[in-house]
Length: 130
Image 1: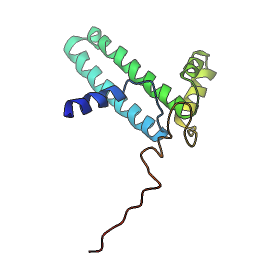
Image 2 (image 1 turned 120 degrees about the vertical axis):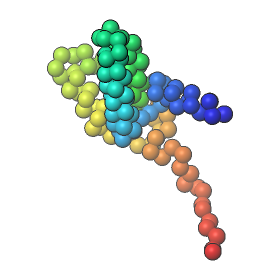
Image 3 (image 1 turned 135 degrees about the vertical axis):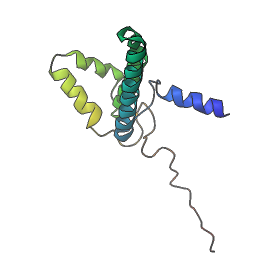
């Protein structure tokens, strides 16, 4: 059971489906960047610059997942990531969309609203008097 939970947590960093809130995007982006930097420095010191090449594919896969799910939160397809290829304006628009634009309220074609996911408004909690 615990191994399944751990593999699920690792899988969540690479999945392209679903939605990702702004707050979670910022947090995961920071964690992945710090993790990449620490591993990069370690591998650079141990094996030289050639040893760091193994870090790039998983790092790009994680960032692709984060950016795709962030766009899904705004009801946009991951194909919007190709906008970053437009010189100068493309990366600026993508940075604005990924970091500052609020996601759509409620469910959209990419999944349930991550803000309200797991909340049950019909559930009433009754506290026992002590």
